[in-house]
Length: 326
Image (cartoon, rainbow, N blue to C red; front, side, top):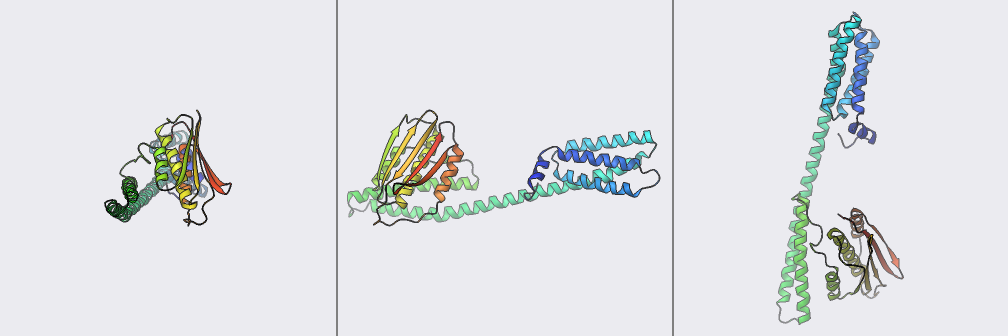
């Protein structure tokens, strides 16, 4: 079925209406055929044209070939039976059904198959373009990340640097290596290599907070309730905290960030709040793509997300149900 069809057309294609249309076409053809006794009245020709149009539409929209064959066969048997009762020619009845119903239905079926082939070709083109984009990402981003890891490794081994700077270089190298691994997983997914576990295999929010603090952020974590939760939910919560810390670092440098996780039997609420930023520090521009992606992520988990200004700073609140999440 073509992607340009309207909603009513898609309903017809998915339901039994095309078969009903074919039944109506066969009945029109039977009526026209029984009226052709030695002469062909003009109204019977018009009736056959209408029947052909209805059968063509039914053929283009139908998915059940067996049902259509049964309807056409029943129409042929009915035509022969009616001809025996009315004394009309059974051959004319079969000819009318074949030309006004069978042939148009086959023509519509051919167009239906062409629509499916066109959709498959478009899908293949999309997959090929996605694979090409994935390869470009792998070549460009992978190259830059490898260079970053290499330079960080060289700084880590530089004896002229202080221990603090060497530790920072080590963390930078580890982060670049982790980004390369995640990039490879995402590229594999884009290429169609199979499903990929989105996010860390074992989400550790405390480690996320620790790394942010080591990077120089003023960030604290408050937990209320048990920590154990299903892995998909834990990944979703980890992603919320990660996005909240990233936004604070980018748009509110120098602010104090508080991450609060409140878990009940029904849901987990994650609140990431930051104080007003240090106006002497430079802010990074934002595109809101991360926030949109996070909304989609939470929607897939069955959760909700709200965010906005809060006492001169910013607050992000996410609610994730404690059931299974994607």
